[in-house]
Length: 358
Image (cartoon, rainbow, N blue to C red; front, side):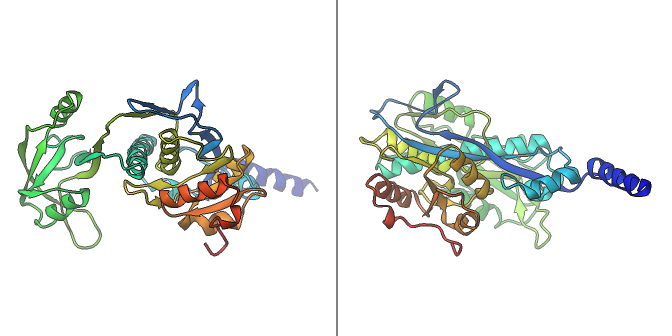
């Protein structure tokens, strides 16, 4: 008995002290995009007529352990046994070498981009024109572009070829071999900001010649300069999204629907409690996200009756669906608007529902 007791104590100590390469996901906060958060409206629109809303269009989140958190065996086992949490390999959430600062920066950038795309997608549904242009989104540290190009610079052309969309930049750069020069024609970020403030079009451009480097891909090497290109927009009126302590791109769909609801008469939800998730691009295409099973649990726990689910997440969500929650499959913002019409009219039999097959 003494030997068994000592062995049990040793095993318990090992379980508590020995770290395991796992991280935990659990349901995070869910916020009504039509309501207030920390005392102020989530969606603030000025310069355009808005309309009263009711019901819920809740964005959902997942709470994850931090990059530096090291789970022990006891915590891992508890997480595996709990329905309200999910234990996954640490590298699934944080690739090797990722720091807390890098993770936070990436989440913030993705969240900011999702807000911009949500605005564009909503306004396109309303046939409101939006001006767009290609910009330098980020500059990689110690890359050829560092100090030469800056985040926010508007890319007008590469080697004299007009740039219409972000993918054009990589296409023109990779026509070169590493060590060759590529010329960017840009509007500096400060000049673009000044023009926007004055409600004018920036006309000052400059040419920046950069010597390309070789990519560190495992396969064939590509010529790179060390930037990522994105899209920026000018909106005909002000749309601000006020939501602190949230990151990542997965709230895009629900932001877009909230904006659409505030800019159109009548209630989009018919007073129902609708939650959801999904990335969104400028054209209104809804993309998959991570942790959908944790988001459905969090949404249902707050009272959601319907959950707008990206089509590519349907099978995963349906595999462990909370009781009383209807999973609605959506591929585009147009699908979501059609589903909301069925919900507010009580035509729920027509809803495209998620199944175990997708």
